[in-house]
Amino acid sequence: MTATDSRDTVSRTTTSTPSGVVVPSEREDPTLASTQEIQAGLGEILEEVAGVAPADATPEKSFTDDLDVDSLSMVEIATAVEDKFGVAIPDDQLANIKTVGDAISFIESNQG
Amino acid sequence: MTPIQLPAGAPGARILGFGSYRPRTRVTNDDLAKRMDTSDEWVQSRVGIAERRWAEPDETLVEMSVAAGGKAIAASGLDAGDIDLVLLATTSPPKAIPGLAPRIAHQLGVPRPGAFDVNAGCAGWCYALSAAADAIRSGTARNALVIGGERLTDYTNLEDRATAVIFADGAGAAVVSASDEPAIGPAVWGSDGDLHEAIAIPENETGMSMAGQAVYRWATTKLTDTLVEAMRRAGVGPDDIDVFAPHQANLRIIELMAKRLKLPERTVIARDIVRSGNTSSASVPLALAALLESGEAKSGDVALLLGYGAGLTFAGQVVVLP
Image 1: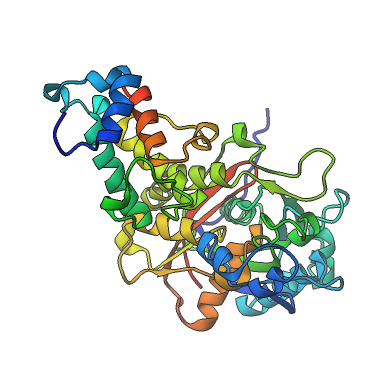
Image 2 (image 1 turned 180 degrees about the vertical axis):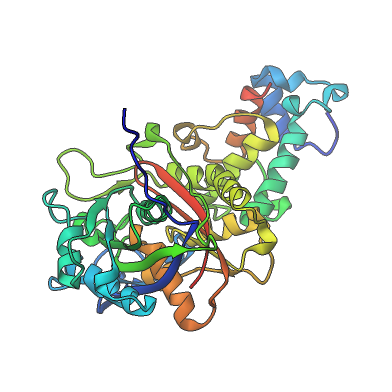
């Protein structure tokens, strides 16, 4: 893990999911992105789809309440995440993803 | 065994003219905000609709379709007596029996044509256009009137803010005729029946419901391939497309599709949804008629069309505008 990782994300993911132990040398594999890569990739998607500044896309932020992302943009984010990280996010599970941290956890638990 | 004979048919089919009917009553988002918890900002940002038309009781499906059909016949330069096939694409008939195409034909003075209704959701008009073009090419018909007409407000709970802001009424029509030069490309059509509940009138209810996220995802992920295939089969590419007129379901879907197709800057994109709402089967002919009336589209333009909706159904095709 690098120093740029937010402490919040590190503690959340390394303790709760097996993918938190991914080592840097495996990062070329797009199905096994590290936590900071997921957060960065998600940030890019949020900026592209909903115009969210990358600095604002922190794990505790609610998509709807804090980042002003509506339900249709959530679908676009979900499909972009699916393409980028090789995970499937059905609509019923999308409804449970409320925060940036929820999305990061979902990707970590379902990738690979 | 005596072989069955087939008529000679025609090398191709083309659209000769469009006609449309927009109901008198204009309903703005502010009008709706007075009767339900919504706002102009909410509706415009989610679906891109600024206003829509709602039919009054006298603006029946038959009357609107006759009005649009009559204008299309006049624009085509043909007489009603020349028409031998009348198709009504609709998903909102007042009754199941009888189909309305024969009565519409009768009111227009079209003598004893083949006439039937097509229910393929919001893809209905594109399905019907393809059926008419194929009938003309095969020699089953010479001149067809293809109408898309809807009174969706009859099947919408007008107090439900999820659907009342979207669905609307109107009719659009085109006359299709035989031509030496093909001007209607092959339809790329299909359906995803596993999603039949995504747009439907639920059991024991009278108003439509729509799984907005599911439909949005389907439209923005599955249908780009349909459009690409429609261009490929017609032998054109994105740079050839002068006009892009997809079903007017949601402005964000329209903009996303245009972006993903990499259409050139000069391509005119139909955004009739802004003033007409979602009129299902009527939306593509209404949009094309409006673009031709305003001069934004012109005769000879190559247009990429796409219908998609309840079923779920979809149909894409390339046509040359009259």
